[in-house]
Image 1 (tube, rainbow, N blue to C red):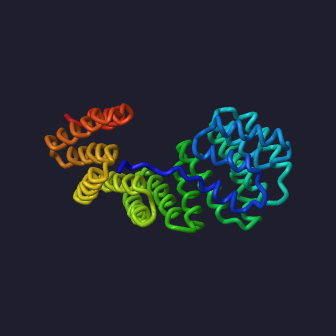
Image 2: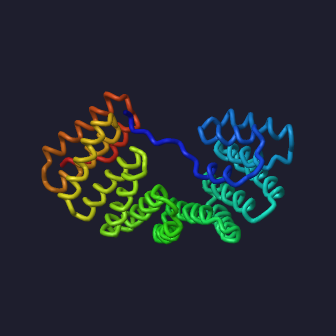
Length: 301
C-alpha cells in the first residue's frame, strides 16, 4: 500500500456544514477545487455566476480558484463581492480567512496577516472556534515563512488551545515542534513531536504517521539523543518497507545516515545513503533523488 496523504479540506467541510442553501454548481465547484481540478472549478464557478451574480458561494469558489492559479487581483475582486453579500460575522470571517490565504499564496505577507487578524476577530464575534484556530495557524504560517520563528511559535501555541480533535492536535504539535527545532530549542521540539506522533498514530494518515516519526528521529538527533533517534528511524524504515512506502523508507534511511555520521559510523552511513539513492532510482522519483543529494551533500568526509 502506497503511503499517500488524503486530500481533505477542513475549510470546505466546516463551510458547507454551516450554510443552508448552496447552489449545485457552487457546491460542485468547491469540491472540484479541493480535488485540485482548477479547470473544472473555474468552469463551474462561471456557470453558477451566469445563473446568478449574487451566488456568494460561487464567488468564494471562483476567488479560491483564481488564487490557486496565481491570479490575485481578480481573486480579491471575487472575495470583495462575496463579502458584500455576507450577512453576519460568520460569513465575513469566511471571506477574511480565504482572503488571508490568497495574500499568503501571493507572498503579500503584511496583507495576509491583516486579513487573518480580521478573520480572527470576526470568528471570535461569531463564536466559531474552528475559524479562530485556523486564523492563528494562518498567522503562524506567515511568520514561519518569513523566518519570524518566535512569533510563529506563539501563534501555533494559541491555535493548539483551540484544537477540537486528535487530527488538529497532531497538526498543532507538529508545527510547535518544528518552530522549537528551528529556534534550536531541541528538548521542547522532541517533547511536542512525541505528542504529534501519538496523535497521528491514533488518528492520522499513514503519511502523517511516517512523517512524524522521521521528524522525531531528526529532532532526537539534534538533541544528541542518538539511541532514541536510531530506534525511532529504524522502526519507521521497517514500517515503510512493509507498507510499500518507498519515499519514507528512503527518507528515513538518509536521516539515519546523518545520525550514523554523528556517532562515527561512516561505513553504515554510506550504505544507508546508497540504499536511499537506489530506492529513488527504482521508483523513478527525481524529486526524492534531489532531496537525498541535498540532505547528504558533504555528509561523508
